Length: 454
Image (cartoon, rainbow, N blue to C red):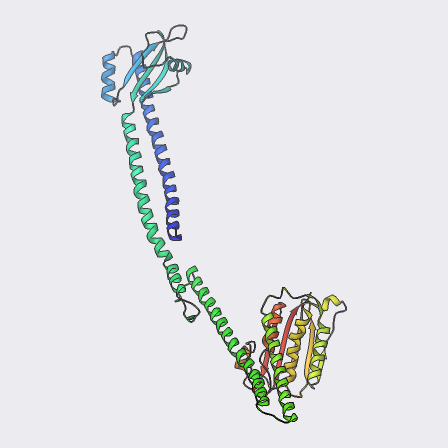
């Protein structure tokens, strides 16, 4: 059963439950009012009968009947009873068969209050009347045919109304639920035709800020992310294949050249040197790809511990200084005395790779210009700034520096693979940090890394 049908049934059930309670309430109070009114009429007749019988002795029984006929509506099956009580309080026989002795005793015990009783469909109203000649029980009985008929008709009307209302409410609920869930059916139909081959398709956005519009916008944003991820993956595979193919082709070509015929030892030596050079290049490239792939996970399998931020920077600077001749200056103002206040929770090797890549890039793309490294310790985070005065990055290309194998348009003369910054970005993200790059062509680049302390 789909949600649309469930919603319709739930709406119908709840509405009918309210209607049923309302109908039952109307029926109950109508029934109570009908019988209360009928008993009052019986009581009135009983008291009138008592007054005519004992207080107006000059009016005959025939006159009493005539007055009741003229001024009181005759009730169906109406009968009057007058029973004298003996000195011992017992009703004087013979007693009417319709009147149970227990009821007569209740009337006598009520001392003038009206006592009601029902035998099947016949209703009784009786009271005790004290006269000079003795005590008498005055009883009026009748059948509430008119009231029963009203209640029966009311019950039939309520049942018919409930059935008709149920059908109408279900039909209306089904119609409105179809209208309500129409956008969901549209979303389902559109999403079903979207696959990896047509991720460019999008759902038609709606005007407004309701939940449907928000859902459509969320789907479209998700599709944007998926499309970007697929394109990045395709570009990664394409670029990786190209980068790996280049040194492999050189190695194979050099080996074929060396083996094609007998050559002097010096030629073999040069060929082997070229093969070693290309193999080393291939080794660095595959190592970078492996590290990049490993840092795309959440890092839970890495060994984490306390890493001193200042020691991390000194170690990263030493590695860069062993490769490049740039002057790398360190600026560490006002470091805390407590070691715990300068520690980062993370993996030392990964953090060293991330910061080391940033410093290496600063040295590589700034020629012999000096590189400045600064560490600022705040209350909750460590801020690392690496500043160079190199070639800079074009403004419209900065957003691509975290894409694997991307290299700025002004770096063609400098050897590189475009893996360092994506790898550093992944490591910083793994450590719940942030990285920002500010650069201007011909002026230099500043890379700022924020890492949480503790």
